[in-house]
Length: 419
Image 1 (tube, rainbow, N blue to C red):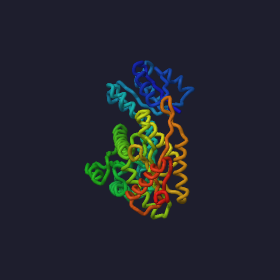
Image 2: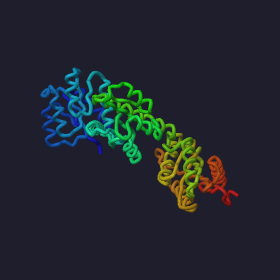
Image 3: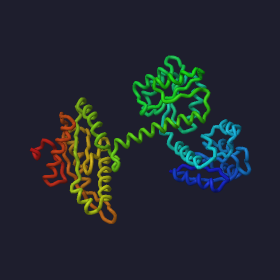
Image 4: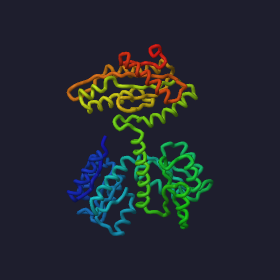
């Protein structure tokens, strides 16, 4: 279901641009052009995810529409053509999401980012650590205004406990001076477990000594804020660090994922498989490593084109996710795939793999006006004590025999057929 955005704007061209931006983010947009329209609309309909509000309207020249919309609990972004400090302070004294000066086209690019953040920030959890309840609550209120999930702690030791309890925390905002464990020591402890790619740390302090920012950074913090800070600077620092983490996540995903099928790629499969196999062996958990190849795949490309071939690869990946949801799946390259999965016993694992093969064999894949069918040849090794490269080689040999013996079958390494 789409979220709704209230756009309060008397300029038709600007309202049109904001509507286009909002629709690109899947918002349903309602436009009001003056304060009277806003009051009439909100008297019967307040179900809005957020609002953008022009500071000066024909019947509300001094920002009166801001207070009106905020009184209904609607998170609001103020768009303003006024740049004087008095107007800025008046806007920031109210619990708005942000204000954006309408200076040039960059204003609308920034608006799109802010709206995107409002939609996605709930995916990010931030831990706020401060022994002062007033200071802690102030930071929490600012973060919740931006739709972040927030966890709190009174000191460093409690913060470490919260980090252990909440695995999805992406940022820690910590005060400097606290009982039991202060911010510098907490930052140092965090960096023993979490890298900068996993977790961001921002130090805050009301102390006037400038050395504290350097101490925080040298002990592993990513940023520093001196209290009292203005909401603008606070949000800029928070969002910059969150965006950095998200960009790192995207880069890591791209480096570890096959671009076409979104399965793991060869490198990430080998790395993850080695770790999982060690765990399976240490816990005596039955497991299977299977190499999978699409039969006569070259004919698909030759007869229907490479786009059809790409579609076939995507369908195989889809079926792999369906059948091996708890397993480790990968496209190793070309038409070759792999899966590592654990189960109750060898028979259970074999049946899972063969069910996948049979499901593919009876399916049809739409290619334009045509449909095509494919089959798979699969080589499997069970509970091997060999190294991962050796297990891959064993499964590959079994796969080769599956091809040699008629395709569309599963061959187990060490079976009579292989012998």
